[in-house]
Structures are given as structure tokens and as C-alpha cells.
Length: 232
Image (cartoon, helix red, strand yellow):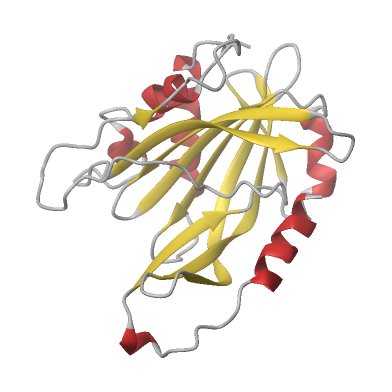
């Protein structure tokens, strides 16, 4: 279902009628995690490049007060002072930090809410989300591609895999959007006790393949600070 939504969205956008020199353009990379259409469209707090202070989380929990963990809690866990060091870029800082709850509707009308957070630095973007999907993580490697690898994070079963981001060209003067292939994202699914999973994804702004060690450091350090995490 998600893959069809992405295909439909890509088909619906047309090439701009004017050349890029005739209007300003903005580019964003959106990660598609496991074909689940995790397009990272959320409100963010934009930090000025000349400001040495890292961005604070900008988020609202109004949509989902009853869930065990919220978007703002995920953002607080992810937007930590040592995140740049964990990513191997210790001189950088968070330029954008956000958390929200995205809503999805299945074919049978069932609605699901996914808490998620994203932090963007100069080199890396990092996303943290949680799902109540009841598919066991140990069974997911079979349909995440031949490069998927089983791992263990904090005593929890995990799967490490790759996916490709979607690059979006926003024509600021005309309101149209172009889509195209982006860089590689590396993601880690980590099982939750009682069902469901956490997902940590990283990708680079320069489309270089991310460092797996950076992803593992982030997951091993951040996940134990999420409110509903339990030690394995």
C-alpha cells in the first residue's frame, strides 16, 4: 500500500514549466524505510547557520496523548548533546529538531499513529520512530532485501538494512514538486518487549553511504533513554 502511494505521488508531479534559473528551488531528502513510506514531512525549528546553539525540539503531542511514548519524548531522547559525537561529526550541531505523530490509514479503514522524531545536522539526518506492528523483527530480514543483517541491540533482536531516500525539488516560485532517487539510508529495526519495534535511520546530506558504526552507536545510546524501553 505504501509503495503504491509513493508511486502515485511521483506520477502526480510534473516537470516544472520554467527553468531552474527562473525561480528558487529547495531540495529535501525523504527516507523510505522498508517500503513503508516514512516520508519525513513534519514541522521543524530552523536554526540559523551562524548560531552556535543547537536547535531545540519543536513538536506537538496534541494528536496522541494516550500512547506510551510521544513524538516529543522521542525528539528529546534523540536530540542529545553528544549526538554529533555518536555520528562521528563532533564539531557539528543540530540545525533542525522535530517530533510528531503521523497518521496512516489501512485498506480496511484502520488508522494507526506513528510517533517519530528527526534531527538534522550538516552531514547527517537521523530519524527515530516506534511502531506497534505485531510482525516479529526476527522475521523481517527475509523481506528487507538480501543485504539485511540480523543484529542484537541491548538484548533486543534487531535487523540492519539499507533503503534509498527520495529527493524532492520544491519549486518555491511555482508550487510544484519534482521527485527523484536520493542517497542511501541505513536503518535498524529493534524489537520492543510485548510487540512492535523501534526504528533508527540515518542518511547523509551528500548522498555518501552512512557509517554503520555511527548508526549502531546512536541506537545503543539513544534507545535505552526512550521512556518505554526495557532492558533485554
